[in-house]
Image (cartoon, rainbow, N blue to C red; front, side):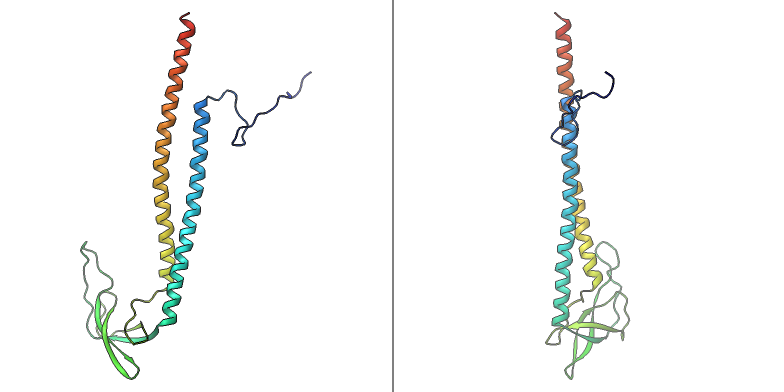
Length: 194
């Protein structure tokens, strides 16, 4: 009778139909590829978790700064120099003297301003409960850049780790493939030598 065979299809552990002609080394390589793909998925999830965690940390820090500081307008007393970092690039935030009013008195302290800012420039700064400069303001762009940096750093580290695992697995597969061929040739010659 013609038609489809009613042979049973055997499924492997991975859920794919097993190939009766596949060499053991090929099944081993397919398993390693599945493991590497699963690890890549875990790395992407880990990067998302790290980015979310960093976002929450920076958002909490920004909220805490907004809750505990007051914004005042400071006027720079001196020109901000165009300073160079040790590597030769322009440093963007030199410290200069600035003055602002706090509870009917004048405060003068050093604050960060963009490189090359002229004297007499007004800048909105955050001060603490005592009227002292509270450091640079945490902005939304700082929060976003922190979260993106955490995600990219996690992805880069994961990619490096996965690359090393992939290289080790490729060597292991090649070693098994060579052993399989050596054994096959030995069996072949053993049958003809009789």
